[in-house]
Amino acid sequence: MAGINSVAKWVASGLVLCLLCACTPYQRWIEQGDLSNQVIAGTRYQHRVLINPAGRSHPAPEHWHVYIEGDGRAVDGNGRPSRDPTPRTPLLLPMVLEDPAPALYLGRPCYFHTADAHCSPVDWTLGRYSRDTVDSMAAVVRRQIPATATLTLIGHSGGGTLAVLLAAQLTNVTRVVTLAGNLQVAQWTRHHHYSPLTLSLDPGSEPPLEPGIQQFHFAGAQDEEVLPSWIQHYARQQPDAHFQLLQGTGHRQGWPLWWTLISFEPTIKTP
Image (tube, rainbow, N blue to C red; front, side, top):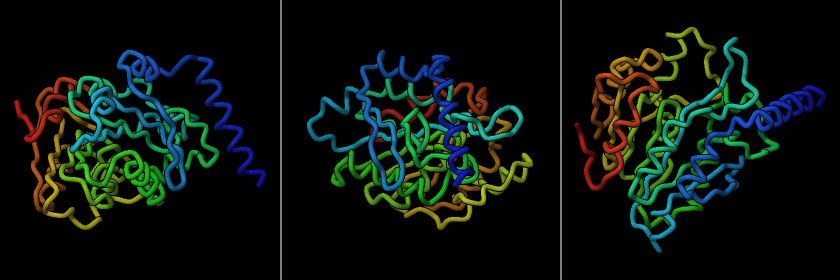
């Protein structure tokens, strides 16, 4: 019990420090984009959920885009678990603001300052793609979006990992789009000599998604964090998947230029 209490105090002190440092730029995006902002309970965790004006203005949208951010600051520069995994500069949040379709930005467990008592550093390190995480995020989607509406899941990096894992659980997903998606987790940890994510699921070892789900997996040609060859290999194992390599794009650089690839229905636009 003492160990659990010490972890909780450590995490809480980090969140307080973060707030004192005003390191919450996502809140500025929320205000500027007129996004609704709620904390919604999943099966285990609390999740920050943002909805764009298009999602609020339609009485019953038939199709939604669901965005899932990457791993943010899971560890610090010394490889230790960070005190707050919330990304300093969210990559997908600006895309939500630009998206003309109804869009929901789905916060991952313990991200974006939900004051969740269940959170510990395990949740954004070894268990960042855990079954509990996927189940909790799926529950939020079901509560926020009617089952009659279809979904496009859009994820960057580790958010792409979760998008694929969620697509296997949600029955109304018609499309999955990943940007630099970490779709071969075991290979990623071995290549970088990271600790194995022993409490996480790995899309590379999961069964293929259903053939009716279109998959578009984009890789950055200059990405040295998630190698394009891993993404291409994953796409080849899927029944209805398309791989595209984007020149001039790294793991985080260049992607905002490509938001039009994923924002318009019914087809993915390509350069």
